[in-house]
Amino acid sequence: MLRATRGQSTIEFALVFIFIFIPVLIGLADVARTYYEHLAVVNAAKVAARWAGLTPVQRCGTGYGSVDEVVRADLDDVPIGIRGVQTPVITETTGSRIEVTVSYTHTLLFGLVGGRTVFTGSASMPILNQQSLGGSCTYPYEAPMVRNAGGLSPVRITIRVPGYSGLMISGSIWCDPNIASCAGSSTVPVPFILTEVPGNPGTYRMATCTAELFEADPRTRGSITICGGSCTPVTIPLPEPSGPNPC
Image (cartoon, rainbow, N blue to C red; front, top):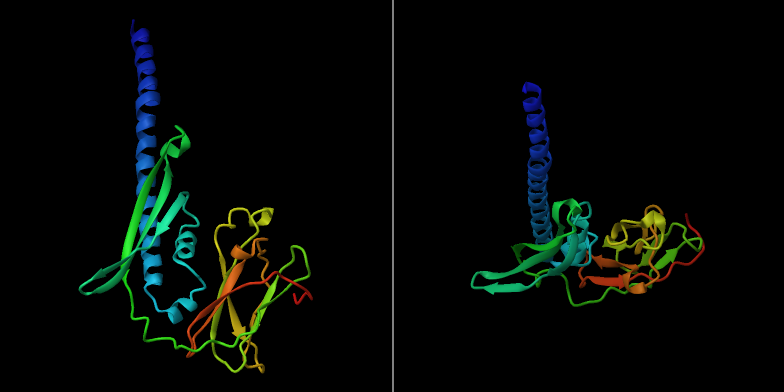
C-alpha cells in the first residue's frame, strides 16, 4: 500500500511538472523576452529620433542616411521582425519634435505555438535648428570611383571634391543577400569613412579595402555623404565597382 502511494505521488508530481510547471516557466521566459525586445525597440527609436533631430552636417559623421537605417542597425542583434518605421513631425508651442515609431513582430513562446503578435515602440526628440548650419552652395564633386578586381572581390572607394579640404565624407554599403558570407547582414548597411589623401587636397579615400559586397540593384547598393564645409550636405549613390584592383 505504501509503495502504491509513493508511486502515485511520483506520477502526480511528474504530471504537474510537465503540464503546469514547465509551461509556466516558458511563459515567464517569454514575458521576459517580450520586455527585453520592447526595451530594445524603444531604445532604437530614441537613437533614431536623436539622429533625425540633428542638423544635416551632424548627421554626416554618423555614416547613416535615414532613420530606417539607424533603427535596423541598432536592432541588428535583436530577434524580431521590423514591420515599419514611421517618423511624424509634431509641432508644438515650444517647438517641433520628431517621433519615431517602430512596429515589430514578436514570436510567441519561442515559436512553439507558431503564433505572432505585433507590438510598437516609440520615442521622440526635439528638432535642432537646421537653418544655422550648411549654406546654399553645392560641392563640386566628381563621380565616386569604386575599384575592385571584378566579381566578388573587396572594394575601395575614392572621390574628389576639388578645392574643398577637411570635409567629412562618410557612407554605407550593403552586402549582396545572394552571397553566403553576407547572410544575416544584408538588411543592415555597413558604414565607412573616407579620409583625405595626404599631399592630395580634395581627394578622399577609404583607408583600407572593404570585404563587403554590393547588391546588384543600384538603388540599394550604397551611398556616400559629403558635409562638414560651408555648403549644403549632399548624398551620392555609389556606382557599380570597376577595376583596376587597388587592394
